[in-house]
Image (cartoon, rainbow, N blue to C red; front, side, top):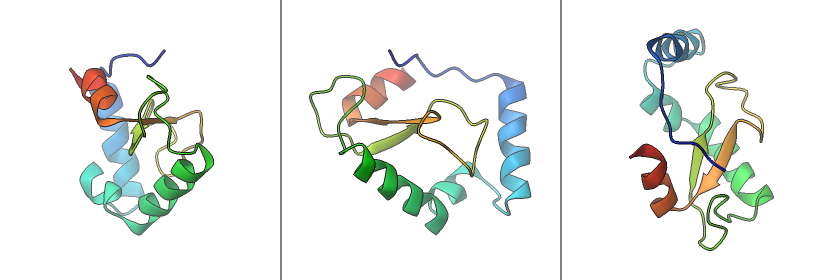
Length: 91
């Protein structure tokens, strides 16, 4: 089961510190980077682009379960979601 996404202030501070150490000024800049795009495409390919929550819809969103390994994410750190399931996670 994929949990609702709730982040603490400490987690946010860690994310921004980690982004700065990688040379990015924001999470948005990281998500638009070639680095993330390559990782995203690899994950979609390996997981066959199936939503990992509903298993019914093609997933197009690579969602972080944790930002602990930001920049060096593993398949345990991220999941593929369809738009509807991603919306549910962020409600």
